[in-house]
Length: 97
Image 1: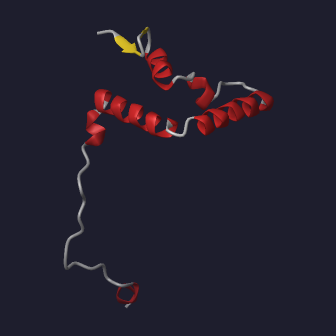
Image 2 (image 1 turned 180 degrees about the vertical axis):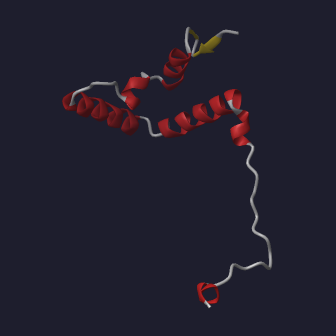
Image 3 (image 1 turned 90 degrees about the vertical axis):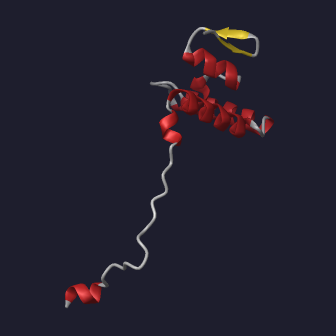
């Protein structure tokens, strides 16, 4: 199956994510060995993108949720853990006695 995003065929998972987000992943995650100056410039560019695209965090969340649903759907299987009714833990005073 071909992964097509915005009319482009993605050759890899990384390229698919970059096409879906419209930015390179390294902009958000950084690169190993970057200098403090490079990091500051990268974060400054990221802040500008976020300021210009207020819906960007929502788009990223949607892409992440879709990826989880596609590749690890069991992560969305949430089970409610309820506490037994009527059972209380002994107080510290009772335990010390």
